[in-house]
Amino acid sequence: MAMELMKMPQLGESVTEGTISKWLVKPGDHVTKYDPLAEVMTDKVNAEVPSSFTGIIKELKADENQTLAVGEVICSIEVETAKTDNENAGQVSQNEEKFDASVIRDVQQAAEPSRKARYSPAVLKLSQEHGIDLSKVKGTGNEGRITRKDLLKLVESGNLPKADEPSAISDAAPEEIAPQVNRQTSPVANVPTAAGDKEIPVTGIRKAIASNMLKSKHEIPHAWTMVEVDASNMVKLRDNLKSDFKQKEGYNLTYFAFFVKAVAQALTEFPELNSMWAGEKIVQKKEINISIAVATEDALFVPVIKNADEKSIKGIAREIQELASKVKSGKLKAEDMQGGTFTVNNTGSFGSVQSMGIINYPQAAILQVETIVKRPVVINDMIAVRDMVNLCLSLDHRVLDGLVCGRFLARVKEIIEKISKDNTPIY
Image 1 (cartoon, rainbow, N blue to C red):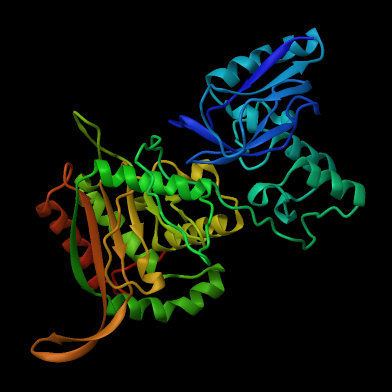
Image 2: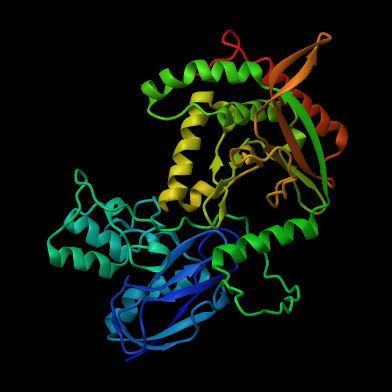
């Protein structure tokens, strides 16, 4: 029998390392090709690593919660036959160089371009063989992921959730979507503890968020500016339309959709803000892809609305709803997180009235949309109660200066304040 080595795969573009969050096998276990070996977490995605071989697990080379660089050995497998070796030779090369899309597809659909990052090939194959709707399966794996054993238990019980049957929705945590960051070497504070103190282990997701924020603050010289916007016309229009819109479309017409549309429109006029610092050059991005922050109880995720400038307010509202739903149901995919060029954060959703956001590295700016509040303001020497909102911009001072950012914010303000039934199409 030959001995083969499984290595840490590359689970996404620019990913350089991964953390073994949970081993699904132990030494002595028999595995077949495509069986899941371990659950791995990176700062971009959570995924099961499938075996490239059929054989016996000989040694686990890493502990749970240990971080390894791409290409480092994670375990050794004693393969069964020469036929198995030859069969997997091509796959070994792929595993050593990068985590090819075919590794995370169904074995029966290896030629298709679609990627199935949320489920292992073994899970996909079983679900298709038995007609199981995976969205209705509650997983027992790490952070609620569905494992092969979960499906085998369902098959044995005969209680298979089909597409037209209600069942438990998987509550798996969404993949982490923070941009790629390097491992930090900052010293760890020696925090004294006392009786009654509670120590909470830092999850991989929280580590990724911390690393990304630290990288952004260390590398980007942040500057801040803010404008006050009279959103009364927008509030009136949205409130008049929301009931009919919800009844017709099936999802909410939110204030946030209007703000995202206004930002996308302003970015077409001030493309400098749709840029990234690249050392000896500044890259001004052609596509306007708006990253939006979506929070859960213990993490923050930033999915992307692609080509937001080409979408209507209705289209943006739909994407906001769909992406938020994916985050909450644990179905966010790697492609949902990639390509963002500018971030808009709806901090007003939890009552904030003024905040200074940390830039979503490597972007050049982030806009915080604060709470809309009714306040007395002076209009034509008269006091009136208006719906006011603060828009707070954090900017990378290597890329941007106050003048262009001020003009950009003034344009966003103008768009919002001129919203009306006659000049603001929803569809």
